[in-house]
Amino acid sequence: MVDIDYKKEKIGQILLSRDIITKEQLEEALDAQRNTGEKLGEILIKKGFISDETLVELISFQRGFESVDLNKIQDKIDPSVANIISKDFEYKRKIFPFKLTDNTLYVAMVDPRDINVIDEIRLLTGYNVKPYISTAKTIDNIIRLYTSDDYSLREVQEIIKDEDFTVGKDVGEITEKNSLIRLSNQIILKAVSLRASDIHIEPQEKNCTVRFRIDGVLQKIKDVPKTVQRLLISRYKIMGGMDITESRLPQDGRSSINFRSRVIDLRLASIPTVYGENITIRILDKDESVFDLKKAGMDDDDIPKYLKMIGLPHGSIIITGPTGSGKTTTLYASLNKIANIKKKIFTIEDPVEYRFPTVMQVQVNLKIDMSFSKALRAFLRSDPDIILVGEIRDLETAKIAMEASITGHLVLTTLHTNDAPSSLTRLMEMGIDAYVISAAVSCIVAQRLVRALCTNCKKEVDVPVLSLNKDIRSILKGEKIYKSDGCKRCNFTGYMGRTGIYSVLIVSNKIREMILEGKSVDVINDVAREEGMRTLLEAGAYKVAEGITSLEELYRVVF
Image (cartoon, rainbow, N blue to C red; front, side, top):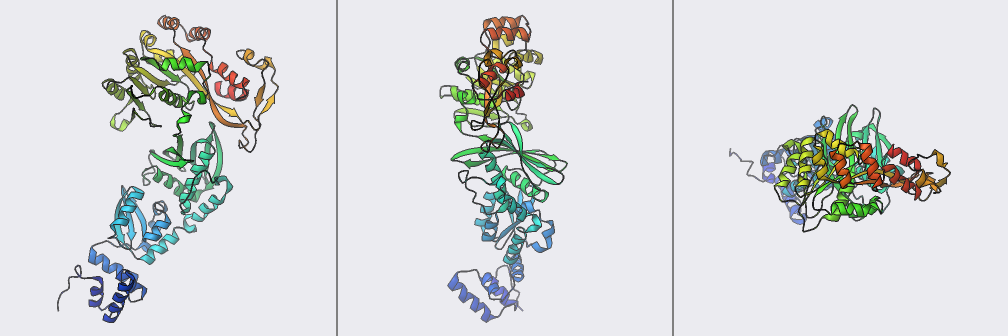
């Protein structure tokens, strides 16, 4: 008997030698192959000459591919892995992802030799691909299983039909037929259409809550079933390039979408909680028009003064306020004004939220010891004209930034203080000498964001002058004051959009002397007001007098 090297023989010859098919059956299949161009194995299965399992066994043996029986391992398959690729793609290419470890995706395939399909999967997912051979019938059945109620995708489809997640035709095309992908995209597009700055996917004990931060205030949008939670969170982690197999540690990621012919960047962050992973998605608009001081709300009297300060060749410009007060927008609006081909500009940010042409932007990365202070030292060796420091957090960063502004560089940065004069004492408390602050700081801008009244439903309200804060009585005396009412256009909140209120302190020679003399914040504040600085309360009062915002909103933000 002659030994046959099956690894060198063709499938038809192996089947014939094993008496699995007859010579007549093989000839019939080969004739059909010549007419249709189909693969011989598929023809043999269609004609009923062999089973799927027989073909898989032979190909696995002949070509050295491992086989997988998806039916035996279906209880171990993570549905979030199964949903990494759209069902349309899986059906069309006869593939099914069933496992993910580290950076390798394990995929069942009818033809694991198909390099083109493997490359497509690698590009779609960003993972390395390890192919396994399986039958077309088994793959089709398992795909259908993962679009059934077993993994709550019917619940996902019901959520999509809900008007809470319905988005207008002008928001964007949602072309994916996969229900989970459609749901995750619709949540984002709904948030963008409602002008939300953040999306919060919040696991609860019995459900999962979706909330949007609109005009600085969180609003509950929808509760989704607990069974959908893991699928939805995994989908967002995949979008952000995060590791979906890691649920015990916080992670960060980035993504982007197209919205009305412009690109919207998404910054994603996950953090483990007792009921599952919380996902926060920051929505970053790349539209350059948002980086405009006038549109941001800076007063016509303050803009020329501020532009003069950022036009100086050296000195420190400090933007101050709490988290979420629009400091980064003001920094970017400043860069938008002064950036040009004649100036070398470096930025160190945490993170880089918007990318500027001709500006060298660096992101903080503590894993490799790339801190604010370390980047600043490197900048000073690279011949900069302007340096932007995302935030002064420690003494070392503050010292380098102040010294850079004294030695001929313009430095733009931020601090967390309640008002402009307090920034001077904050720097002193950090350990910066008074003479350095006096020489370095040119301008301090304190700011807040207030919600703007909806022009469709705002109503005039009678407010007695004596009930007003004494500092703004003269500003609002005789002026019309409006309040929020609520209508469908503003989602019954009474507000539509936000605007900034600014307190611009120019560090004059007199104030420099007061810094050297160690004068108190209150004394410096009084002198700054005499020289033309408006407090945040006064700046907001002018917005109230113009009918832009309400008195209640001003008090909420300032006090």
